[in-house]
Amino acid sequence: MLKKSLSIVIVALFVFSFIAVATLSAEEGKITGTVMSVNVETGEMVVKDDAGEMKSLMADPKVVDLKVFKEGDMVVVESDENGAVKSLEVSK
Image (cartoon, rainbow, N blue to C red):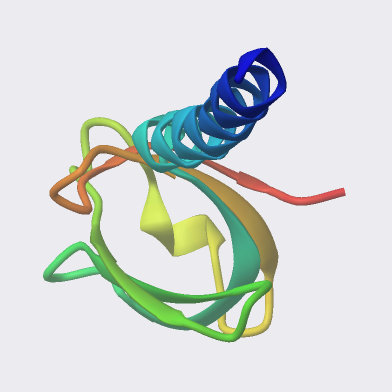
């Protein structure tokens, strides 16, 4: 009985640790990837992340100068849950 209870607790902790890591990663909002397109007039930028997913982001010109970025640039983008860019820099 004790072994079974202990096993259940260990499995539950293991599952919750994966959930916590996934939640923290999603909240962080950091994307590393390649610029696929930039529209300076509208502030829209499309970045293909390392997993191959396309992310459409919006940049406020007061926060980011999109003129310095071009298609093919490797970037690190931090965005909020709505896709608004909080920071953007060229990846090294």
